View 1: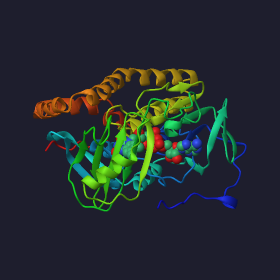
View 2 (view 1 turned 90 degrees about the horizontal axis):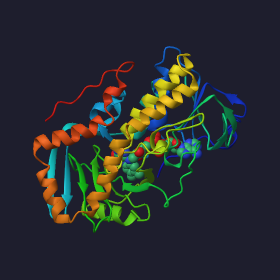
View 3 (view 1 turned 180 degrees about the horizontal axis):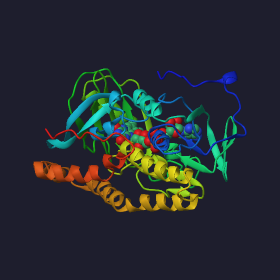
View 4 (view 1 turned 135 degrees about the vertical axis):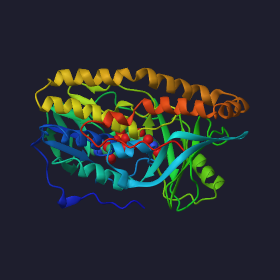
Length: 378
Ligand SMILES: Cc1cc2nc3c(=O)[nH]c(=O)nc-3n(C[C@H](O)[C@H](O)[C@H](O)COP(=O)(O)OP(=O)(O)OC[C@H]3O[C@@H](n4cnc5c(N)ncnc54)[C@H](O)[C@@H]3O)c2cc1C
């Protein structure tokens, strides 16, 4: 069971009339990346971060990122297990790839706490955000105001249109279980239509725990049965469920005074459903634009337009991944198996996964943050 840490009842005082230079809605990967980047500015603004839960309270994913991003964000202390390879299994065989970089499975709460420690004097309050009118954010604890607003509230996107309603939206859905288990050394993926029609199953070992789940690119398809089937296949207990929707298409990055970051802007990469490093990456870009406004180097309008242009520059890569997301489930399984084996040549793996990392590379964190340490290929 998830431990509830969020202050309730009389402990929740009113926030009505509260003002800040920047209000960030959402204190997960995207929101904390923005707040952290703002703290690195020459003249950090007054930042108020809001979330309906305490920081780190609700794990939102299998928590695997390319290892170089752990150092880039100064969160190596949250690492649980490094995963040097990936395997892809189909009903016709298995291909194992040695990656040019590794994955790291991390502890969600520790990672969020380590990010928050880097957020300087930013304030945090638990509050449910209902929406906004102009610069005013409406919450269950009253209205708060800021000239700069960040929507980092995930797929629901609480401050900007369009309000997203599953299943009639460009969303995928994922569900996983977290049994205690010491098995596995790689990030394993199953492409099997008997398991999930359009999507995949996975196993992410995390030192003493395994995150086993399934995702469907079609939001109409349920994922509970595929997740249970994955657990049975791996002979682990189907316990401690967690799941969510996540986007597989970019949305508008800005709406009048609002900057959208992470799943709120559709930054989760199609095909892989990987949205943590992209939340970091776009969060850093957004934080830098907001710093420039706070320091008087840019107007708000300039920052909004520069951030929107940065987001748009990534559209071709997201389109390419979305195309693969449509193509791969449509390939006859024997053809897919042959392709996966053929792509296992090391120079092709290096090229494909090098391109993939390049789309949201940890070097983006260079400058005001510790330089990333890239693991040598094994
Ligand atoms: C089962 C599953 C496994 C996944 N595994 C991985 C993985 O291993 N690696 C990877 O890179 N990606 C993974 N993803 C995708 C990844 O979880 C998301 O892309 C990522 O969490 C996006 O980060 P975010 O900060 O934008 O949004 P979120 O992590 O969803 O955070 C949004 C925050 O906003 C808060 N919030 C929401 N609404 C409100 C409101 N109204 N008021 C106040 N606060 C609010 C939430 O409490 C939350 O803290 C997975 C997704 C699923 C469903």
